[in-house]
Amino acid sequence: MDSDATNYTLGIEEEYLLVDAESCALVDVPDALMTDCAKALGDKVSPEFLACQIEVGTGVCANIAEARADLGHLRRTIADCAAEYGMAPLAVSCHPFADWHTRRHTEKKRYNDLARDLAGVVRRMLICGTHVHVGLPDDDLRLDIMRQFSYFLPHLLALSTSSPFWGGQDTGLNSYRLTVFDNLPRTGLPPEFISYGEYRRSVDTIIGAGLIEDTSKIWWDIRPSAHFPTLETRICDVMPIMEHTLTIAALIQSITRMLVELRRRNQRWRIYDRFLIAENRWRAQRYGPREGLLDIGRGKLVPMPQLVAELIEMLEADAMVLECLNELRGAQDILALGTSAERQRATHADAVAQGASPDEALREVVRALMAEFRQGPAPTAP
Image (cartoon, rainbow, N blue to C red; front, side, top):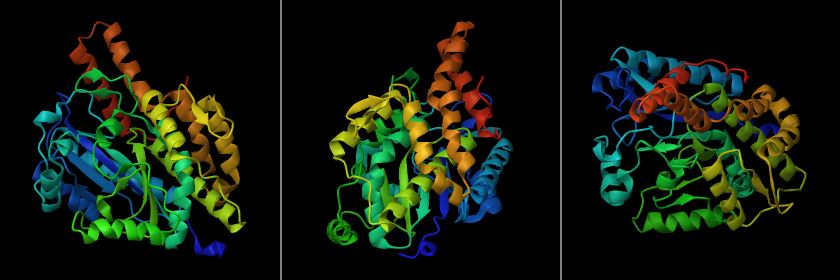
């Protein structure tokens, strides 16, 4: 495999929720606002399943610097357009107090079909996610790297968690989003395919039977993209602070390169049982980065700061080649500052301590999320 054949291009997709800037309540995206966004951003913006959501996607970025410029422009434009209508976007996976029963889906054939096919399950999909694409030119390479990459998915989830509240209640989870999303079919950790051919035979069986039209309706935590020659990591919550999103992208890009380089040397990351990876996935979903993950090789729980330090050390050489070393090291900043889930709980607790009612405390959480959406470089932890 020629090292120049794999250039690890990046693409980042984020889904946002739209709120009224005064009341902090969810609102549907007005047609005029979507028209304004489309005029400014072209096909980099689109409606999502629910009418209160907007999706953006960067172009194909050669490196993390290009991704920062592109995603920053997308966020600023969406925020500026929304402000003209007295609204604001949130880069968060669950709105703290919205009621999913009152939301409607976007009138579009794909979404009408989803609403029909998935019935009551899809009506609860008041959630948003982050998807990171890394360019890999070869079909079999993508499948091989996907099998090995699954080990790291819980680590990424733990660092990205942003959905502790649901329907006005603290769920006790750091990523309640996955609890909702996992009710859909064809979600979760990907099956164990040993080759691209085996993967295609399986998915072509259900496509041929007319159950789905293409692989875009396969929603695993990581998958070969349905439309691009990329490996698409989908497990992460949406992160309000853009620099944290870029850190997650740098981790994904660097892990991918590390695994490809191992393969180039006729080595590989050990394939661990999905049962054990699923246990870490649950721990990340429940506790975020604060209770540690199972180091499967060692057979014991290891604190997340230690795992992150080891991961950064392991990936430094790859990150240097990819020119994303500072972003990679930003994982330490996420631990120091706290994930969005942790910051949301802290904002809520502070508001309650200062005498706010439960409802007003939740609105304070939304106001903090609105401010973080427009934030530049991540703040330094105290």
